[in-house]
Length: 51
Image (tube, rainbow, N blue to C red; front, side, top):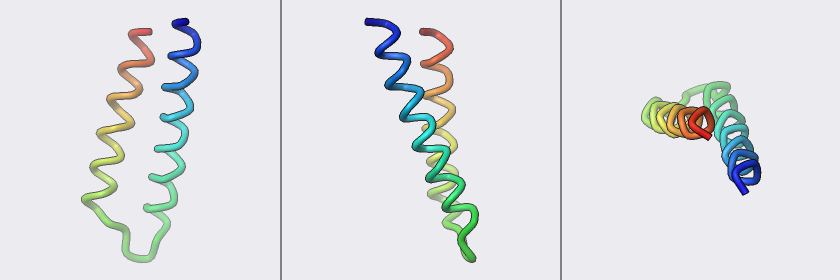
């Protein structure tokens, strides 16, 4: 059960990373969206590390 949860969190983390990369490559990136995505990514990273 725990490994499925961690796998799910890891997949969400990768999705946010991809969205973040896409946004940063835009000619005029949305800095508010970038900050939001970074916060979400950090929360997921913390959740993954706690298991």
